[in-house]
Length: 207
Image (cartoon, rainbow, N blue to C red; front, side, top):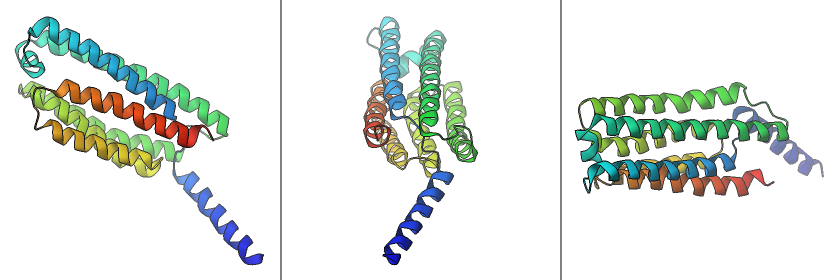
């Protein structure tokens, strides 16, 4: 009996240490919504490119008309803002429900480790656009986003690491299919987010 109680105490201590070092209030539902926003954004981007290019590949249209890049940029900003707002609201709700603080040491570490690769990738993509190498923007965003997820995963749910790896692999595959970046972008930011968001929702949020 004493031995079993001792093991249970050790297990409880380990769980408490894990919870204190990881931000576990991420909402899986926010990932599903982010994927939905991304699919809507991909559809709008496809319409912009279709209206302009008349059969031209997406990256060719981006190279030949700055206004296309600007319109796509606005769509991307809109998708990102919707995803961020939804993520904050749902995470706050989950944190309140579980009685945990949303903004503590672990969440600060999570945000910092996520944003460093993400902003690095964003700056790199701007350089690609500056030098008219737009065909690498889509795979670069997938790869750097995946690296951001992998880097931040040690401070949150472990499933985020596997999603990040999937993004990196998808981005590398995209480099071999130049001209179809929008489809890879929709697959990654759309369907991958929906899949992993739903997985985390049923695995953690419904407990």
